[in-house]
Structure formats: C-alpha cells, structure tokens
Image (cartoon, rainbow, N blue to C red; front, side, top):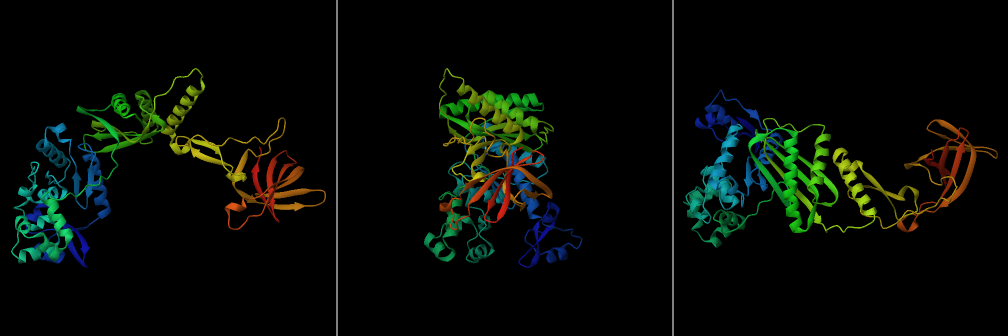
Length: 470
C-alpha cells in the first residue's frame, strides 16, 4: 500500500488488487485499514518519482500519437484523431496500447471517447470502452455521478437529492444546477456529454511536420538507423518543399521495443531541407554522444520531426564562389554544433559602441544574423597593434608605482617595470546610456623588461589592467 498525509491524516493513496479484494480503497484512513488488516504493509508516497514514471510512460505513448498530455497523478490523455487507422482502427489501437502497457508490468484502465471528461470517466468505470462518434452522452448516462470527479461534497449532495447517475443529473435544468453548484460543475457535465469542448494541452510541442517509420521487426544496427533517418529526411524534405519552408531544428525519437524512448536533436544555422545534410548532421550527433543510443532489443519506431521551420526560398545559382563558400561555412558550423554543441560555436560581430569591453558581441554561430555594422580599422600599416590580443572580460585592478624616471605595476603578485610606455589614449564613457556618468579612461600601452606588452588604463586615481598583447 502507498500512504500519504492528507488533511492531517495518513490515508491510502494506492492499493493493489489483493488489498482491493479485501475491501481497502484509496482515500481510506490508514488507521481504519490497519484495523481491517493488521498485517498491512505500507510505504510512503513519492510524488516526484511517480511523476517521472508517468512522464516516461507518456514518452512511450508518443509512439501512438504525438499529442499526449499528463492527467496527474495517474493518468494520460491521448488525442488519437487521425492516428487510429495506422493501428487497424480505434478498438485495435486501444487494445494494443493496453496490452503493451500490461506487458511492461503496469495495471491499465483505458477508454476512447470524444471528450477528455468522457474518456477519463469511462476509463475508470467502463474499462476498454470505445465510444462511437456522437455517442458520448449515451455512454455516460448510466455511469454514477462520482465518474465526473466533482468532489465528495458535490457527489454527496446529488445522492442526497436522489440523483445517482449522470443521466439523472443531466435531466435537471442548467440554471438550477448553476445556481446550486456553480458554472464549473455545469461545464464539466456538458463536456462529459459532448456539449462543450475542453481542449488538451500536449506536454511536448507538436512538430510542424513529421515523418515516421514502423518496423515489423525491431532494428538494431547504427547503419540501419542512419539509413532510416535519411529516408525520413527525404520524406520530410518533400513535405517542407510543398510548404516552401526549411527546418531550423530537427528532432529524432527512437522508440524501443521494451518501452524506453530516446530523443536527439540537431539545429541548423539556415533553413534546410536537404536529406543528405540532415543525415550528415545526425551522423555527427550520434558519433559525439557520450551516452550512445542503446537499442536494447531494438527500435520498432523511429520518428523525425521539424518543430521549428522557416521560409526557405530557392537558392539562386551564381558564377562567383562566395555564395558556395558561405554555404560550406554554415554547413561546417552546423556539423561542429551537432558534435560539440551550438553554444561552443561562436561568431564575433562589432558592437555599436566605442567602449573596449563592449565593442564586440560573441554570438552562437548558428543563430547569428548578418551584422549591420562593419569592423572599424584603427591600426595603420606597419604599426604595432593598438588593441590587445587578449582582452579581459572585466578589468583587473593593479598597484602602480611611479617616479620621475620609472614606472611599474604589480599584477597577480608579479612585479613589472616598464621599459616603454605609450599614451595616454583617452576614451570617454557613454554618458547618455547611464544615469550616473562614469569617469573617462586614459589608456597606455606598456612593455616591460622581458618584452611582455600590456594594455592598462587610469580611471581618476585608480589603475586597471585591461588586456595583454602577447
């Protein structure tokens, strides 16, 4: 048995078949249960673990339809519109889902109806029911009022009034029910009878386009997986071409025969629908996984979807090599991003400021748009670099000692004495962007006795080291 503290009392939240046969039920006080069964063994509920298990089952149910929603704490809602024919019809689909979940060791109750309220009620009070279209009201009519899960107080009030079934409650006037129990209760009743619609929110975003392949026998080898992804990429390419779009993100889901699901994703810097590119990116991704995809007893379903797409105009052919070079650079960035992660591929663009530490932007290469500004050339021919090769993210304070004949500073416990010093180069702060104006900086280029060159500045009476040249 599983117990949890509810309303300051320990109550049963789940019971097995043997306990149910002995008269125990969820919601019963633990003290009453022990009075009926002194040898009762109970364990504390673990809601986070239960939710993780429910999410894993939901991942597996994606193999039937990508439109899966959680109905916590112990239920799932699947919108199978347009998917039932893939399994031989609604009854065959429901039977296959129940059978395969039971094979994984789960106790399953399921039903198929036109609305979520009706399906949830029939799953608990009419396990295995498949309601024909438009017959929800007739299927719900004989069920007890508890099937609507309106709460103990509302259900007791209906029974006290002699209204024990949903049909009896539905026969009463809506104004009367609204005045007594509120509009929410009436909406739930109407939704159960298919007179109102209660939408389902999927737990995962639905892809714009998707293609999948089911296997009569589970597949095991990586080459088969890659060839399947390429074939799915060709199908996806045709769908995207008809829409005039290209994929910016591609998700591949692998459904294992034992119920486990593995997902991987790749992203592109520009919209693409080239099957060869798609296959190559997934080959890079699979080769770089620290935890390789374990096929176990094999995958019986592989799905490829494009959750993010953009308009993709046909490429114009040109006689110059610049366009082809840019295309190859984008492809290289995509491949490296697939192998090492998009956040590790950085492109630098000029910033709209003259402040040194903000003069450039470091952006992920796959998401960066063409820069509107160009780099400003500040170094003349045959001139030593005017900006350091390494610029610190934050200037570091230093201790400066200065006399009439020498200049030196201490940085990171090391003493540096200047043999050459050039400056100052004054850089004023952008007063129009700050409420409190920052002081100007006087920058100097310094070379010490060992030939190391530094870039430091004075701000009023304080000194900072901002970068090193080599």
